[in-house]
Amino acid sequence: MPSPVATISASGNAALRVSSALEDREAGWRLVHHLARFIDDARVPGVECVIPTYDAALIEIDPVESSLERMRSYLESVIARLDADRPLTETPRLFEVPVLYDLDGELDLRMVAEAQGLSAADIVRLHSEPSYVVRCLGAPGGSPMLDGPAFPLPVPRLSSPRASVPQGVVSVAGRQATITPAAAPGGWALIGRTPLVVLDLDAEPFVPYEPGDLIRFRPIARDEYVSLLGTRMVAS
Image (tube, helix red, strand yellow):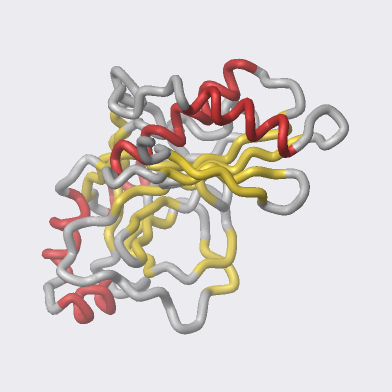
């Protein structure tokens, strides 16, 4: 028998976790997000919400309307029809994010540079060169979870997390990068700030990007940061 493309396991008594079993990480990422979008679009009875991540999706159910056994059978039939080679987004949108990088030493950029054996300018260049795929939405407030820049080493988390990280901060940890849409505690290394408003509670959806879209960071000077402060984040 062929190997399964995904494994399904119970997560408590009211949720199922679908994890990719594909060796190709890109295909695994696409598979779980295709599944999440299919379930959202189908408005499956009994499904409370679907939360896709890098290589897994959590499907929360209403035990009154469905059961883990019934939902597992349904998910198996859906997964068998999904094409993990199909692009998640046929025409991804590009969001250019201006960043005032921490060259004055107010945040953690110098610490990151020293740990990497690089200059602060190298960190800015490596961080702002690629276009990053939005892999999934995280906390707080729909943070865009991105693959990290091509630093020589993973970036360690802070030994003592901050009690509050302000909105608009651009940060890195491990091999990941993100933007903080809303103030929250955090232990990632902060390397800059964007003047853009990322989270808008009066908009639908609350954040303008979705998994499969692209984000590119653009270094700016302080005067441009001030002039753009409060501008909503939109696709280029």
